[in-house]
Image 1 (tube, rainbow, N blue to C red):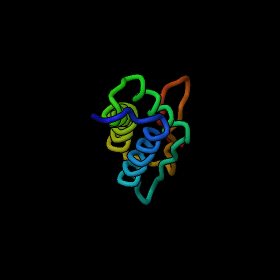
Image 2: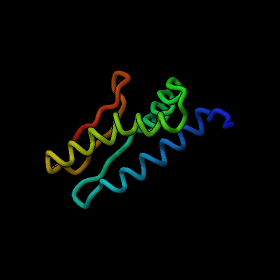
Image 3: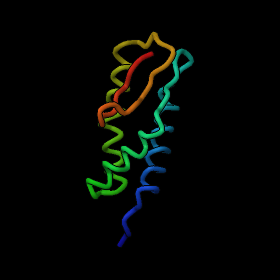
Length: 96
């Protein structure tokens, strides 16, 4: 049986997963800036779900990957920077 992962471990997994995702999406025409508190926010959600790493992947898909991919795909990004931030306890993705 596995022991529960701690917040710190979940935050590191979230950071690694999100950074890999961003590296795959970024292009020469824009870059993605991620607020540092995103990783802890994702880890907290995973702890509440009590399903460990699977929750991290689900949260990243729901709150970062799907909206980000949709934005990049639909809008043919013309900005230089995309910011991923926490605002009102929600992840927000905005073009700058």
